[in-house]
Amino acid sequence: MTHTVEADDSVLTKHYTSWSRDEPGREWAALTLLSRQAPDLVPAPLARASDPRPWVSMSVLPGEPLSGVLTVGQLEGLGEALEALWSIDPDGLPPVGVPAVIDRTSRSLAVLREGHGVIADAASAADDWLGTAVEVLTAVQDPVVGHGDPNLANYLWDGTRIRIVDFEDAGRGDLTLELANLVEHLSSRDTEWSTVVSRFPVDPERFRAGRSLWAAFWLTLIGPGGPSAARNPPGTAEAQAERVLSLVRPTA
Image (cartoon, rainbow, N blue to C red; front, side, top):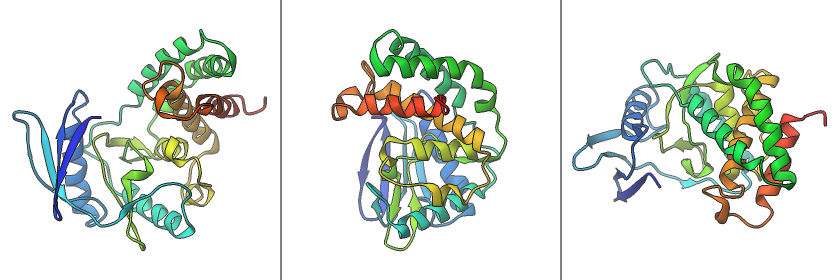
C-alpha cells in the first residue's frame, strides 16, 4: 500500500506512505495535464504538499469501480476512455518505468526458475525470452500518457461512461505496452478484450511481447515467495505459469 485516503463528497486526499518513485509528483503532473485536456475524464488536482509527508488532494468523480466480467456497455465505455486518454500528448511527463519493471521481473524470475514444476518451467522460459526482448519492450514507438496501474478498480463506471483514477504510476508510456498491461492485469482475467484491443493500431508481435512481460511480472508477484502469493486461491500461480508459457512459447 503506497497511500491512505480520506474523502468527503467532493474532495479526496491521498496521503502517501511511500514515494521512492515520486508517486505524488507523477500523480500531480498527470492530473494537471489531463484535467486541462480532457475535463471530467480524471480527477481535477486541487492542492498538494510534502510536509510532513506528501499528499495530493483532488476532486471526487462519480461511478463505481469495474470488476469481474465487463458488460458490452462497460467495454465500450472503457475503450472510449482509453482513446481519450491516449489522444493526449504526454510531453513533459516522466517516463513510465518499464526498464525498472524488466529488471525487477528478471531478478525475480531468476529465483523462481530454481524451483520445480510448471512455475519453474515458466520462469525459465520467460527469463530466457526476456533477455532477448529488452530493446523491443523499452522502445517507445507510440507515445501516450501511460496510466501505469490498469487495475479494473481504477476505472469508474457511472452507467454511461468510464472515468479514470489513481495516477501515481503515470508517465510517458507506449500505447502497445499500456494496452498489454491492461489485458494481462490479474483483475482483467474474466473479460474478453478483443473489442477493446481492436480499437488501437498495435503490432501483434509487439503486443504479444508486452503481454509476455506483464504476464511474467504477475508470475513473480503471485508465485512462491512473491509479495502477493498469499492473497490468491491455490492454483492461481500455476495457472499464471501456464499463461506465461502460452505467450513466450506460442508454438509449443
